[in-house]
Each structure stands twice: as structure tokens, then as C-alpha cells.
Image (cartoon, rainbow, N blue to C red; front, side, top):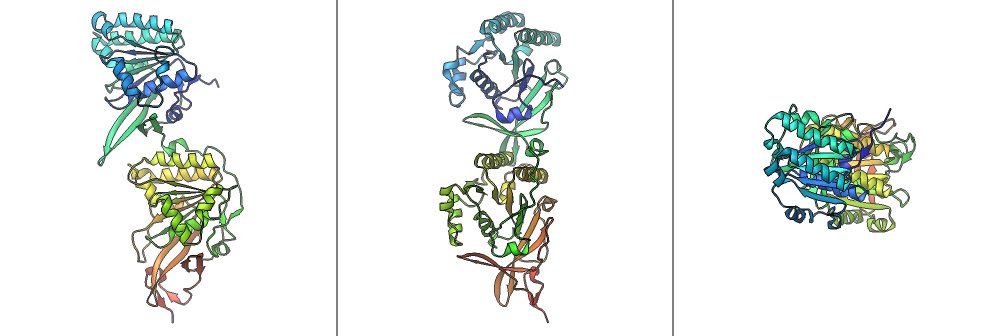
Length: 478
């Protein structure tokens, strides 16, 4: 099957949505309300294109001066003033449009495309051209003639418009692709979105995807479950074991956690979930490094907590055996977090990951209905990358016999499920750990007392003569 030639936008997430980039020689409409990021996206593509040896013509049908545009673009890292007037030529066609009409605009741009030898044409202000057209036929003629001249020159075209055109509009029917930028309020948060509404002759990742404008320009985060609906590489079938680092737990679960498995420990605040995860990370080495991907505790607090149970994370970090990434829950995008985690794993060859916690990661989502799909795709991709995962999730109830999964179907995504609870026994408050599930592994189902000290964590079978332990109030058996 013949593959279409691609023109990479240089915006990594956008190229992923387009499955390789813009189709070379095709025409696209980029639409969205004022301030949605259309001009930034187009100019980012332009400057990335010239860095790869291309030439760009930017034609504005707006009254805004180029000097003012350059003033705004100069705050972004992709802007390179030395390219302006050389590889990138900016032409104002506003006066020509106002005084002479669409036909003269076409002639002007045809001359400039030829003179510039442009391989990308950006027309900013399609709405102005539309208002100058007497009929829909004139609009079609304007777009068709520009497309014809651009195609003859081997030029890819981007039309920018601030109006949300209907699917049946003449503009939509004539172009090859439509990229829509938008913004919506979720509670009191403002979230930017991008959607590919049309991609003629090319596959694409459909649906809405988050994006943001940073000092690097527009950054697009494809929905993780669409990007990794199938893991990027086949999972390594390794039936080996990975040491948990947790007292005598390995003896109870077949000499360690299954390689490339996902373990989830649930429990109330302060019960010791993070401490178990830190012990798991303590088994990391420079050859097989570990990653603490946390939300509620700063790297300084993580190191202090590790030190309290006899672990020297500073030394591990210095040797390259340990990496700590902290993300506050006060801001962020869910897919951005997923991308950050996977990028860190790739960059450092991570083999062990502690996600502390999945609840913290879920807090930034704007759509709770997709959490199961998101975490499923994330965990499958980590498995495929040969990573063993240990994750935590906080439960609200300190005591009680009722056990609720942290999210519908989430427990089915993980391979190993551990439950921690508080129990009152003999006028003392104790911590209890129970193994609820171990995939493809025999395990000891005994209730275990968790003892945390400055030497680490030990598990003891301390509830042999007690009943109703998981209710929170243990009773001695007869």
C-alpha cells in the first residue's frame, strides 16, 4: 500500500494525532475562537518547517501589523527572528483584499509563492476573505485557485479562521483536513482542546485531546488510551520474579512479585502504603533504576520518609539507581502526566516505578468516566516497556468491614491487589495487610501485621487467634 508523503509539524503531539504529520501538498483549515492558539500553531509549524530546510509564506488578511505579531511570537522559544524575511516571508494582503478583491489576492499570493519557492503557505484570516465573497461560489473559487497554485508548487496550505465553520460549508468540503482548537470551563478550570474533525485520505486519532500553550508554543497531549490502544511494543514474556523489598512478603507470594506486573496497595491515610512502595524502590540498581512518581510529597519529604525506615535515597539518586519526579495536584492535565511518566521511563531506562498515588494522578482529570481506560492503557504500556509497577490508592474509611474498589473495574487492571487496614486489638491500634489477588501466583492468604521501624518493614502472622480483623475491631476466638 502506497504511503502518503508527510510534512512533520514539529509539534510532537500533533504529529501523533495526524499519524505522522500533515499530508504534504494537502490543504487544512485551522479554526477556533480568538485566543484559542491558531496563530501560534501555524507559526510553530512554519518555524519548525524552515529549520528542516523548507520555505514558508505567511499571508495575513487581517489588519493587525506584522510588527505586533512578531512582538507576541518573540516570547516563544520557537521564534527565530533571523528566519523572518529569509526562509519565512510575511506578506500583508489586507489592503489588496479591501481595495481590489479576492481575485487580486489570489494573484498576489501566486506571485509570492513562486518568488519565495514556498513549500508551506499559511493564510491567516479566512473569515475576512469569506465576508468579501459575494456568493458561496466565490468563496469556493478563492480556495480552489489558491489550492491549485499551491499544489502546482508542491506547497502545503493552512487556512486560519476564527469562525466555527459548519461541516457542510464550502470551505470544509474543499479542504483535506480540519483542525479545531477550543477552550472550555471545567468547574473553574479552563482547559484547551484540539480535535481533528476531518483528515481526508489519512488515519488520525479522533476525539478531543488536551493541549496547552507554554513558552515552547502549543503542546498537544493525545489521549493516552487512543495513543496506546495497543502497546507500542510487544510485552516481554518473562516469568521471573522481582524482589519486593518488603520484609518477608516475597516468601508469601512465590519468591517475589511477577516480572513486569502491576501491584496496587489500597488503604487509609497513614497506614503505610507509601512506606511499602519505598521499600519496593529500595531494590533498584544503577543497571535497573527506579522512579518515584509522586503527587502529595515533595522530593525532600520522600527522602526524609525513606530515611526514617532505614533507606538512603540520596545515595541511590547519586548512583543513578533512583529518580524522583514530583507533580503537585493543584494543576496539570491527565494525559500530560501520563506522557511525562512514560518519557521519564524511556529517558532513564526505568525498570521499577512507584506511582504514589493513582488517586493523586486522577485528581487532575476533567472526565472521570475515562479513568479506567486511561489507567489500563498506561499500565499496559509500562508492562510492554518491561517495567514493574507498584501503585497506591487511598481509601477514605479508616475502619469498617466494607471494602470498595477505588474505581469501577480498576482492580481488574492490576495484577496484584493488596489491602491495608487499621485494626484495634488488645487496646492497641495495629496495621494489617491482606493479599486479595496475585495473578498467576500462589500466595499465602493469612492476615499479616505490618510493623514499621527504622530498620524497614516486617510482616508477622499475628492474627491467628482473632476474628473480624478487617472490620477494624478484632475479637479473640474461643
